[in-house]
Image: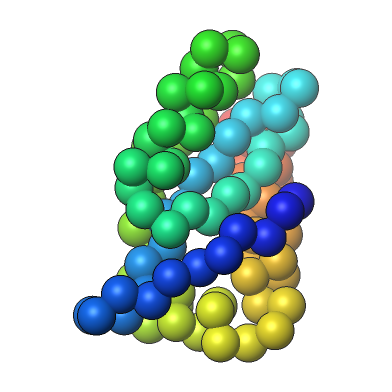
Length: 92
């Protein structure tokens, strides 16, 4: 996954999480976006390609700040989210 440049606004960083279904119903990808607009735009493009997505979820500013401050934390967070969603799909 390409790492997007993150911005920090006056009130702190903002990140929006979007879950996107992959090629199978059990395959999911977690993605982070700087704005809800960017996340919604990505969801619309997925819709056109017949991939389901969740609605964007804004992360609490403290979590966003922690993810941006620690090298590698963003990727580790996304990996944990993906594994949790895939596990939930298996038991559903």
